[in-house]
Length: 450
Ligand code: UGA
Image: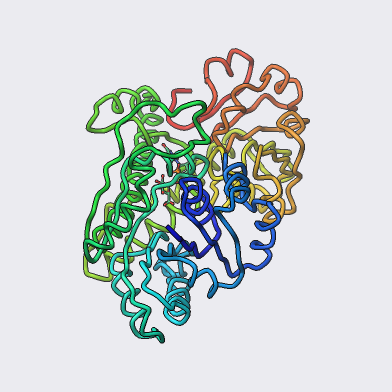
């Protein structure tokens, strides 16, 4: 099928690359002309495992192209995926102006029937507004529009594997032909007929993903409800960690045992600095705002957000307790990205830690395997070094702020020799407390007996 993708961020690029790999003809566009010329020249503007290879092979096979001319992209596709940003406004409400712009563009430029699919995360009822906007601005009699919502459940860092091996594909539609068109788009994935760049030579056996057809409103709600539930789970684990600290338990033992109950599940119970990134913090705010706007008080979610905001304060309490005065102290920071396997620093708890350290007059020496360039742009006052060992040199303390597994494999004996003081405060519960203490470190983390 001929498919247009509007917006070449994480979601748009992964969607475009994966659909091209499954044999569709994909045209991508973005308002950022520089981004488009980089992509045309084969440069991928974000770090996402396997994405570069996938784009290279799709470009080579002629299955994907990039244009800064939105009209050209819109006219090319029978189905148009909207993958533009929906950032938070000051109030927490989602800013839908990019969606509105795209709707007007599609209406003005389309010359034939189009299936317009929202992939961006949007509040419930956006699809209805989108349908209205397309109708109002349509100028060509041959252009008719169906609207659908097809939320993505991609995690940054594993987005390609998530796209090819989804837990579920959700399509919110207004009628059966729209559902059929989406089923056609996803058929190679539903039937597992594609070349998977992640699993060589073959993907592990597993059930085919369910294809769920819902109303548009339900699909939009499914996305917000899923992200919010996961955020709730994280905040719950973080409160349990606080209780463990007060009562003398070990949060790792507690959450491991909880997770073995299949009704609870073991994922997203990791305590630490809390959730960040461009999805959870903004989605939770937008969902609270949406609920408030229709008179439903989502106190549960407000509490989860509040717990999350306090994580950094509670980390600083630990830092201050151990280091006393921060001014003029040299602090090594390991990890800047909002989580491992990404270079994304948006709403990163790690970056917030660096920012506060700098504000308090500490000298920060930071390292992250992928996010250095972005962090340096955002916070140029910190010193960014080549590796974890350089970060540790003469440090009064070392903070772990992102759960990169490679930090576990460091030669911690040598790290201890490099540091001026063997003090580690682990914001991600990444390291083994017993081992660290055996190596002579003063070691603090979240929710584990000291
Ligand atoms: C999240 C969802 O997991 C995806 O399903 C969804 O599609 C995506 O948002 C989106 O809306 O686009 P992502 O933001 O990439 O994906 O990252 P997650 O892996 O969900 O992690 C979010 C944050 O929670 C990270 O800061 C992570 O460190 C933190 N986290 C995660 C914890 O603090 N504890 C945990 O147990 C798990």
